[in-house]
Image (cartoon, rainbow, N blue to C red; front, side, top):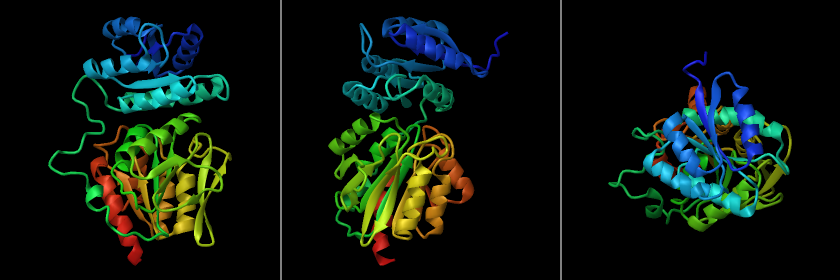
Length: 357
């Protein structure tokens, strides 16, 4: 008899092969099961109503209605946790990032090309569990609440602040992080010290994410390249499948990329980035750990605090998944625990104080 507490998953993809791979992967787990599959959004709509799944996996490119259009309708009328599983074409990657903006919890690459079936099987179950725990449902939503209208964003008000050119802002996130990072970054001033970002995201999707940030933020944002020189007004995003490290080279900070072993099952890993910032910038840094499952970033944030940096973690109420920030709080790594709506202002405030250290 099927346990009543299994996570129920609906797989939506026009490829019968992909539906089979996903179904086998999910059904191999003792705590979850595929209750149905659908080749397009119209079939999916009927099965959502009849099967009442807890989580949906969603393809982007499908017949009759594309996945993004379906996602927008779903989030308006029947919100639920969605993981986008997409091909690696440029248009699909860009649309997948847009899907995260419209309520999807996570994005993954379909097996094929550089991504193997084994990698999908390793990562998918944990992401489904995180999506299930995200709290997205047709009941009132608790994820990433919008800032109260009584207070305008802090960063534009303080954008005339002066900053130490030696300072660094380091940001790390995982599940729910694409939207959280966007929310933080869009409210930061153009003259902020250099920013480095590690987000758990597949290769190629990170390119689309950096492009989107650059279009909507005051700072210049781009995917990091080995040897990049960090400077005020520039934000560098770790490429998918590469660890990013900050090194001190004379009076400059330079970027190193590595494909070493995964850390906390991740590459890029936030711990790797934060540890390098602790060594390179010491007390001239602000570390920020945002929403995400697991513990990546907690030890790195602790290293930053021990090195004299200011450390910030997102609070539970505004996290899609309160995993990484919670682990940081348990370790005493976070000096400040702040709602997402207040993090931009806190970064500006703390970064402006570094010049006097």
